[in-house]
Length: 154
Image (cartoon, rainbow, N blue to C red):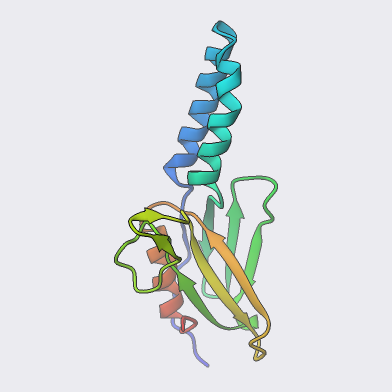
C-alpha cells in the first residue's frame, strides 16, 4: 500500500503546564513568607494537575511513527509504529461540545480534559491500546488530520 507523503510535525505542551510550573514557584515563594500557604499549596497543585494537566504531552509524527512524550515523569512515553497498526479511532474530550466522537460529559460539565486515541493493533481486534493525549488547542486536530492522510483513521 502506497502511503501519502506527509511531512514531519510536532505539537507542543499545553500552556496549562507552564501555568502549573509558575503557580508552584509562586506558591513556594508565598509559603516562605507565610506558613499558611504551605497548607494550601499541595492541595491546589494536585487538584490543578488532576483536572487540567493530566496526560499533558507533545506528539511527534511522521509517516512511519508517532511518538507521544508525556510531561509527567511517571507516565511512560509511547511510540506507535504505523506498520503494526490496523487502524486508529479517537474520542474527543468533554470540552469539545460539538465533537462527533466524545468522551462522556455530564450536562455541560466536562468529565475528562484529555482526548483519547484507540489503537487497534494487527488483525486481532482484541489487541486494543488506549492512548490519552492532552495537547495544545488544535493539536489533536493536526493528529487526526495526519491519521486521515495516511489512511489509518477509522
